Length: 348
Image (cartoon, rainbow, N blue to C red; front, top):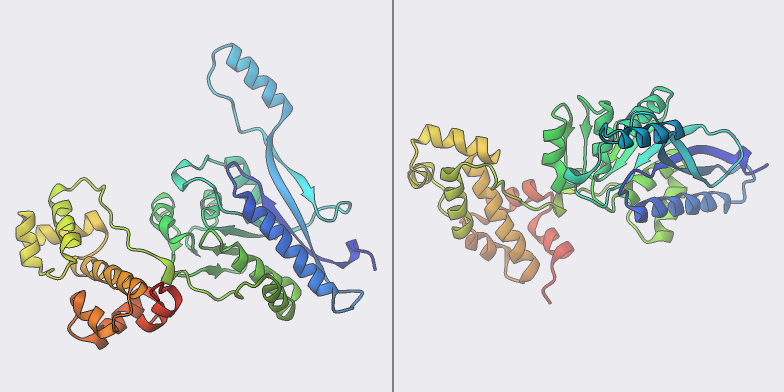
């Protein structure tokens, strides 16, 4: 049985501008190791994964037209006449039959990612031919350009979730989850979530036993983690509402221990109904929810940096009922306080 005959599926990795090459090469290695694990069982027909890398290039005639336009002072280079070409193939020879395509993370923040209409159109065509589209971290913004995520659930890095939802309002963004598998579209959250996505695809293509062997060999956790415990509360402060910003600063400075709406509205110099409306518009949260996030952030820090009892920390951040605090903490972070400390605590 030849290597080509053993190919179970081909996975293509996109080399878009500013792509994180560590993820590209990491995924390439992960799929090779998984294929080796599959073959190690001694089955001559054991399936393998073919990996290819794809880069967008400008056609030669377009380059010449751009040069002519530049000489004539007619503006920037055109990017609409482009092609996507294979620049690496783990099993060169047979025709490509792309079963999965992955948009890896980016090295730049989403606001600085270049528009990629050519890649987006190519991905849409491949999806129409049956390929499963995948993304990791900021790669979700490239999938967003295809329009195929409209009305679907998707995840990205928790710090980019608001930006993804703002740029593509039709996407139902859920940044608490590390991997969201919609069958024909799979999105993964954090920068290093390429390991979760890679193992998810290995399990799908080569089976759970090969996936677990690959995870053990690489000393990484199998898929199933949540992104929620890693998230941090990042308040919106650039909304331009000075009255609301004044209250936010006061809540942060005092640990939000006193968040009664009448007192907050008075501090903002607004009538209560007006204050509630403007606060939610500016921050995306009700004052009570905002205060909870501020308090939980303080509690996270205390659990990470100290060995003080959970009940004491609950009282310090403003909760007299330790049981209620534990329930709220788990709802926000996805972990009970004791479990959070075991995972993230650094105190001796």
